[in-house]
Length: 213
Image 1 (cartoon, one colour):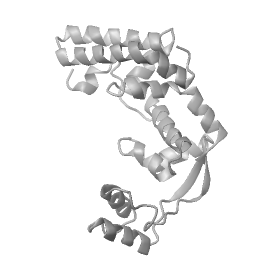
Image 2 (tube, one colour):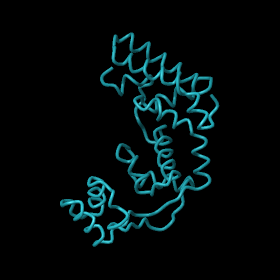
Image 3 (cartoon, rainbow, N blue to C red):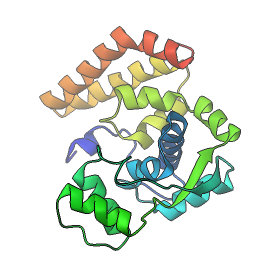
Image 4 (cartoon, rainbow, N blue to C red):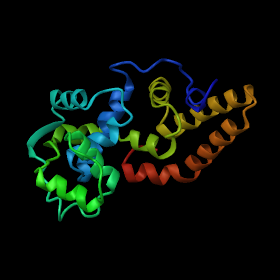
């Protein structure tokens, strides 16, 4: 039981290619695209912590017909990106193989002078939108269980009967048992906090998502 990641996992199966994490990552990318983010931002929001490369994730989305190509992501750096943060601009410069040092004004000018784009543009398909509906429960996980291992939560959810609220409360009860067994006060309090949040807020949250309570 070393570290919170292990504490928040009932099933100690390691991350592998094809694991539930791919379901989670695809959902997050499609959700961002559906929300209106460009593909560069949608993809990078996931790949910073993913074991899959941007190329692999994009290929899987294309093969599944969840996204289709829609040209190039072009930006007027001297106009449309004035509110962008320096770390964001530096990452784009780094990805483009350009110098990353300088003031924000210099970074924007460098991007403009080199006609840097954000790569291929993609849009979500109707199949992708259906995927979001099918896995809308992931938003529930993101809202209440972000400290818990996704693969562990996914496997528990799919191996127990009941609606997502009922199963989630059972899941937390299992973790409370573990916390008590290991006499871990912080772990126990975290589980109690999440359980109270679900009891107070889950019904309204699930109603907004159109997921049965």
